[in-house]
Length: 186
Image 1: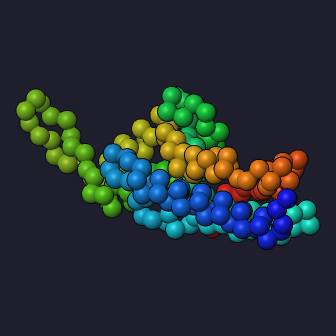
Image 2 (image 1 turned 180 degrees about the vertical axis):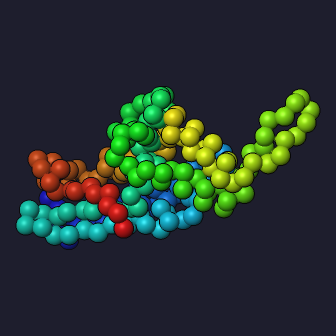
Image 3 (image 1 turned 90 degrees about the vertical axis):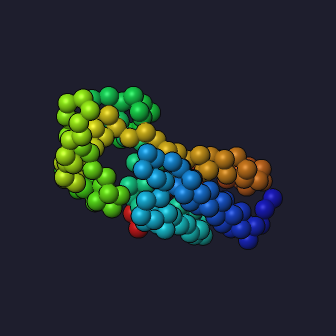
C-alpha cells in the first residue's frame, strides 16, 4: 500500500506527464495554417495542483476554457460528421453570439489569410477583405463543426492506465471523488 507522500508524488507525476504530453500535442498537431499552438495561450494555461482532502487527495488539471472544444471537437449546426461524439454543438444557444467570427477576424489578420474573388477561368480575382475572409471561414466552421484533436484526452487516458496498481486499488471505489478532473478557466 502506498503511503500519503507516495500517493501525492504519483498524482504529481501523473499530472506532469499529462500536461507535458498535451503541450507536445499542441505544438506538433497540424492544422492547414500551422499548429494547434497558435498564440500559446492554451499551451501556457495548462496546469495542475494536488490538494489533500478529508477523504484523500483531489487532483485538478486546468486549462483555458476553449481547450475543451479544441480537445473534444464541436458538432456543426448542419452536420456532426467532423465530431460525431462531441458533447458540444454550434447553434445550441449556449455560446457567445458572434464569438467565432471575432476569433476568426483576429486569426486571419494574424496569419495574413485572404481569399480571392471568383473570376473567369484563367483570371485572378481581387483579394477579399480580412473581415470577409473571416466571415467565410467562421460560417464554414459553424455549419460543419470542429474536428476533435484529443490533445488532452489521449495523454490523460494513457497516463491513467500507467498509474500504479496500489493507487488504483486504494482509490478505485471512489475514483470519481478522489481524482477530480476539472477543466477550469484560468
